[in-house]
Length: 170
Image 1 (tube, rainbow, N blue to C red):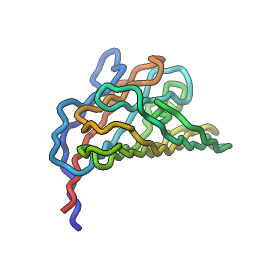
Image 2: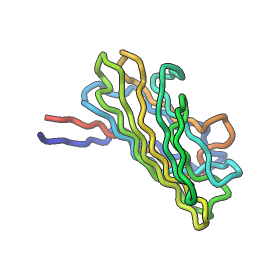
Image 3: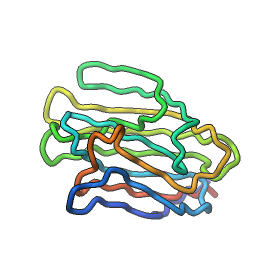
């Protein structure tokens, strides 16, 4: 089975005050799965910030298992809105956290499984690596994706970016 990736859109934060959310709209319904590759840093005054992940501007019908390590411990919890920890302003200067978000069968009439995998760079004891697997309990196709910082504590800083790819399986 051949798998092909096609870039749909890249969103980059330009100079200025930053952005509270990164959004993809009018997602074509011509692929099997979606993949987001991201590089984020926020203005929140801590080593890490939370980012959320919503589909079609719906903030409900989500459940996920969130597993993360801090550099000295590992934890696991059930969440409804967090997508990952991302690098923020008290982490090492000018570094970004990187990650991927995979959404399977985004056009189907079934519930939508998704997963995230993020790592935050930091030249210190505390550096986060997060994994999340979840389910969006909706039969609607995904036509838009919203990635806000959680709780509005910070904004995505200049040079943060996200690229959305459509994946076709044949």
